[in-house]
Image (cartoon, rainbow, N blue to C red; front, side, top):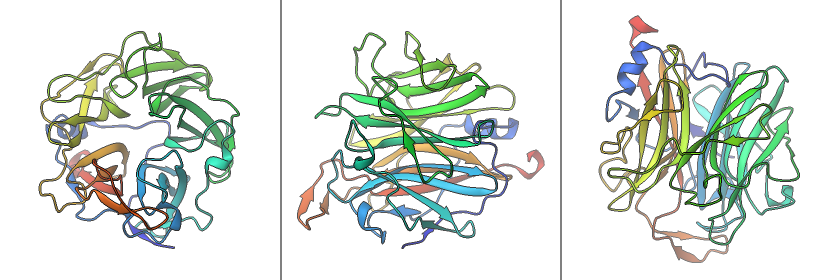
Length: 348
């Protein structure tokens, strides 16, 4: 079992509310935002001791529930592009070293009656119901153009009961806020309500009374413009003053994929800047995150924000599960990175 370096965090906000204060808002309105990134990944397919995720390791999602940090992530050792994606789980021993769960992977294709693997898990601990809820995506077509939203529940975040059918026909990378006892908001990639359009280009807002039956807004709230050709992997944070921030990724010229950030007063009408990324790929091709910064997950401690993100480098060759050398023109998703943004002491 391999440990991975993380960062000490203390008081995170509840899993159903992500808050910013005025000091954070000033920094987060800068382009690029002043994140301090770590020099090495905190998880990597290249260094893991886990046999199931030695080719792909990405899509981290982190919460703190009842004083404990928890992370879910996706990986495989089959190939860089495969439906056979599994879900792993990790916890930190002391806030510094993350230890993968000894029973990993906790979810595999064998757990799905209607698909072969998992993508982009989002986990919420519902305090009212005292259960973990996971929204995730499965691929329904050979070319990845059809992806469906699915749902599962768990008493402990490890043992999951999966709903036997998808709950929405088109989705990618769900981000959910529970805003009341019978009120949920979701932002996710999707085709239009008419089933048309690209799954990877537009982000839509959804509403639900139970987290299962979703009503999709007619028009996308974020779509490509300026320097980016796609808008994928939304993550939304709501400010204490009611302001929202949304991080998401976009493809750019030169084979890079970088994170942008939009702002909104109500979570529906967004102000975008698609000229300057909020969290760009790192300079220098020797860096683990020099090609892609992607799938953002942002959480808050008492003195700083933490951004967990997926990363791609420029190494296109890898060994598959059979030990055969293979090549991925975009490079495998091999790393999970961590960046921090300090909150001024006077504003904590």
